[in-house]
Image 1: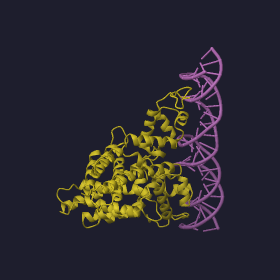
Image 2 (image 1 turned 90 degrees about the vertical axis):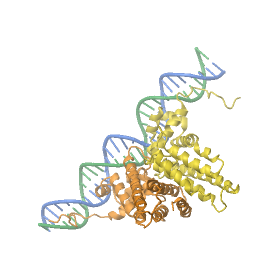
Image 3 (image 1 turned 90 degrees about the horizontal axis):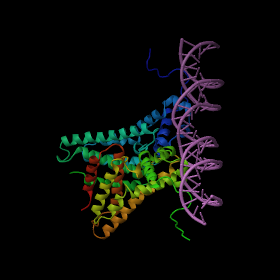
Image 4 (image 1 turned 135 degrees about the vertical axis):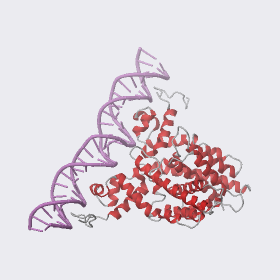
Length: 201
Length: 201
DNA sequence: CGACTTCAGTACCGATCGGTGCCGAAGTTT
DNA sequence: AAACTTCGGCACCGATCGGTACTGAAGTCG
């Protein structure tokens, strides 16, 4: 018996789940978790509520999968930045990447991880906690990366990797807020560049 | 005829509008515009929907007045910071104030101007635009203040007051996001302090 | 072909959304 | 006291919320 049968038997799905998930991600990004209703979502996804429920399970699950897609797509700059050689390059690439991702043409301004749900009522609390964990995960990645850099002598001994990590994450979050408010890419590039002036040498 | 009659004639209001508005502000702060329903609001305000409507006009109007109260209350550090003597002191006070306001005991973590509504659906678009304008107003205040500092020779001639203003605002916004995600006051004080390392001398 | 499995659309669920009309009660003015 | 004005609670408005049975059609297997 083949456990992983390619064709799951029965009528195959009539729509592209990847394309539908992409559209859902864009809508969550633009309107936030609570601001994107199931009707809005399924309309832009081009499917019915029943199909969405069968394919993705839940609004929460859909949001989770949309966030995952966001992480692998527009937010791929995070992993890319962490792979840089020096701590300074990591921070520079992280901030530059967040500027780029927050001002993409054809995508909502800002960051899904920030404006997806910062504060919410009872119904959006799950999404809010998911995003808080997502952001803190990014901060933790930076922290371990900077700690490693400190161990390698890539950072002055009197610098605190934890503070550096939170500072970079804070600036990136601020960039997302600014972008959501209409700041241009040029504006934010200047901010990101200026933010690196405080980097220890 | 007295145009401003103290007692508006008829039965006087049976609840403290200031206290009610304060409670509404706290709920908007905690849950955001869309996340705070009229039922939630009126319940914590201790009044009925009819009384709220008669006293404040609208959910939008209530939000506007709550934001005004927020500006004069927890966000009063903005005006306080702008009155400092030097540009550096302005920036330091602004960031320190945003850390304090974002981690007040008995108040929601973060900043109403940020998490009140960053992204929203159709119904919350008004609040979103109000907050975006509110944040940009703060940035503009910093801009004119720093421009004046540059004219006074309080800043090196090669520094751009616009970039400084947007940088300070960006860090403050990031601090609010971090606070909403659970960062402590000590964490953010270190970040604010570190952020000032890039300040021109 | 025939049995089987899933898709996707309609219609609908109870709950809640922001917002109102109504009306007796309560307080202020003349 | 009489006339007047507003308060504030109840019930309710149409619309929408997230989520589900139900059903007929459509595709894949033995």
